[in-house]
Image (cartoon, rainbow, N blue to C red; front, side, top):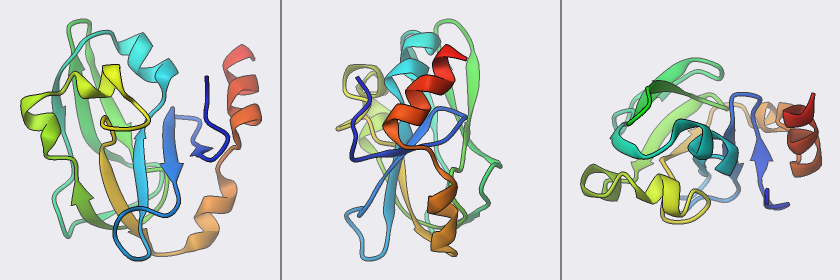
Amino acid sequence: MYPDDLKYSTEHEWVREPGEHEGSVRIGITHYAQDALGDIVYVSLPELGSTVDAGDTCGELESTKSVSDVYAPVSGEVVARNDALDATPELVNNDPYGGGWLFEVVPSDRTGLDALLDAAAYEASLDA
């Protein structure tokens, strides 16, 4: 259920290397997170060119149940946003590891990626 080629944060974000832009990583939320949120109806993402810090809030996902913060799993500059989510936020529910990605960041310190969990450790954290 959790792809082995991704890294995961304890806040339920995933990170895929490489992203579409040179030096970037792609970020989204996990199946677990989208399932807990329910039907997503609005997505707020960080602005292009903005800087995000690992662990800080950088966006929001609004669902029919609640509003949930999106946390940056790594620090760096935002170089891409999934603008398709403006018109079709349900992509986060329907395809969280593909078309439902959120944004891309060029990490300011790639060692931050080492602190993320692999799929087995992330899945174990859900059972804890």
